[in-house]
Image 1: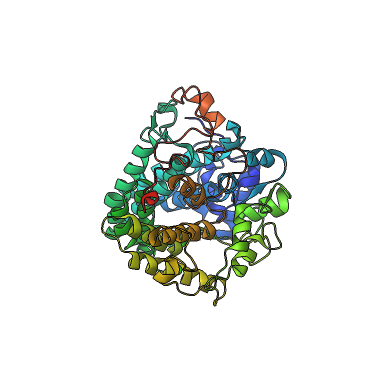
Image 2: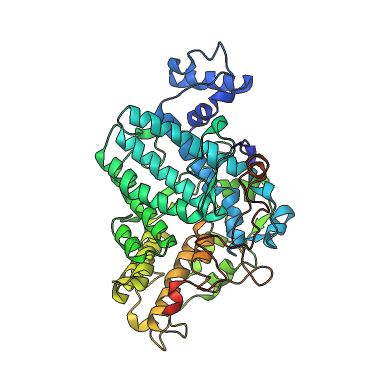
Length: 488
């Protein structure tokens, strides 16, 4: 497998040292000067041992520092072009100029994904392989388990977007330039097993861990265990395993304080929110919210117990996309990646669709998610629903059964909570578009992203012809109507 370097306009880093160490093996004269400056500031003389002799030689770094770089790479995967495109395909955004107007018509080209395909496989997976080796060597099971969660997050996202991907043979470098592709369903099942039987037990076993080099939780094991369980519940949901999803979510993120977020401080070129840098500073006018289903739905969704004015402003501001401080796409706004709200809405969906589920329990989980959003958006906006609200004639009944109306509310709550998150596009396909998001062009929603051109060129195992935009993946098909919720 071959890789392309990340597009410089998409580089957003939380920690200068992590970027420097991540690219040590390709240091230029200019970056060597920067490294010297940073080392002088932090007083870590050992970091430069040998670099003055051969700055282009392959180098090594501690596992916790490599993990830091992998975490930064993972933020790029989930907050840059892949997320923007997913937002267009799920009709939360509008592509308004240049290549983004093309995407708004569902016209992709493989080169759209070159940079972030490389970031996924080299900047995240490649580094995670090294972290796991070092963690096992040091018997640091906490470091190992956290690395496995990041790995599962990156691999699962790639599989959800591209379908079959290099997985078991990924990361072998020059030893295997033509890695085989594993099926999307195989990848997700393997990640499910890894989270349950490796990552979570490893974190529970403890160790030194990454400490403050962990940009999310500073190595806090309890927080990572909860995130791992919510990610596990997400992947069980992908597979239609509703009882297992519910069981995992019961141990998942227990409050909004445990959200996995992309932390940003607004510093351009260092740690600015990638959406802000793209929308407000680099490509003004390319991506908007005008005319999207997201903005339209938030403007019409209100009932006696629901006031969407604050959420509408948070995401869309004056009618486009809110890049002001305090808005979803402000320079220092954190990006929600895996959250308590998602966890509660997984519970609600699974309660409605599992063999052992309960409508009452589903309603409780939905109200918990609404409470969390109420607190986030300012309070007094979302009152608790009752079962009667979803019965025939109720304020939230959509013309179907009580459970069908409740499920629609659950899925729409998730869609509107995750504006800008890749999961909105996955849910659109996973649920066969249960909530009726309109297409932007033609009769069908996109089914996948196209394989990156660099991989098509380099890997003989990429299918020929390459699967197209509307070719269904193994687990998701928004157009086939097979979602279990259709039986309610």
